[in-house]
Image (tube, rainbow, N blue to C red; front, side, top):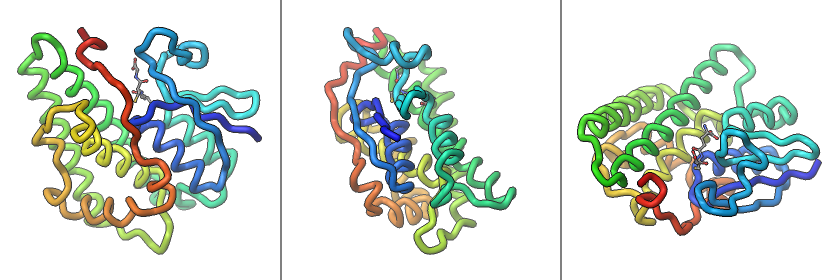
Amino acid sequence: MAFTLINAGPSPFGRKVAIALLEKGLEFDVRMDTPWAAGTITPQYNPLEQLPILIAGDETLFDSGYIVEWIETRYPSPPLLPADGDGRLAARKRQMLGERLMEIAQLLIMEMHRPQPGADWIDRQTRKIDGGLAALDQLYEQRTIAGETIDLGDIAVATTVLVFEHAVTAGYSPDIAAMRWRGKYPALTKFVESVEQRPSFVATRPQEMALDLAATVG
Ligand SMILES: N[C@@H](CCC(=O)N[C@@H](CS)C(=O)NCC(=O)O)C(=O)O
């Protein structure tokens, strides 16, 4: 099966899909796009006009959570979800927190690029980031990663918090205190430091792209 991943350089959602494909040993081509820019190809493939998109043979898949579910269902080996129900639910919970935290962080960063950011909205999103990171830290206090096994929850969490750092160094985001997690959340930090050198993570580091967020939301 031929796979093409349509992605944006820094996208943690796209990186999650790329890591899942690499962990499964599936080869894929990458096509970069900017969904906000004139001439974007994204709406041709996704009515929700978002990346990532995976073209898998004659199927077109979108939304990163759905795409990784599709990959896991079609290519179950090696597994990226535990076989037992409780383990699966625990992995899904971490995946959900990682994905929602990323969406909340995007809302917050976009708001900060508006001409007149709303202070209450910023406070509200900031509280969610504090709460979500603290919840993940608690979950990682109880998680030991056996051998080389990671799951879709680990991938979603690590890609999210790693892009928090990239967004600041690449200049897309102000340095927001609530989004600084390394060292502040010990169990989460230990977990990320145990996976960020995996070949699938090294091969998919966020790439800078020209982004004018003020123009996008203005
Ligand atoms: N729930 C979506 C979120 C994807 C998302 O927010 N993608 C961003 C790029 S990182 C995007 O395409 N934004 C354009 C837009 O929302 O209009 C997923 O998991 O795939």
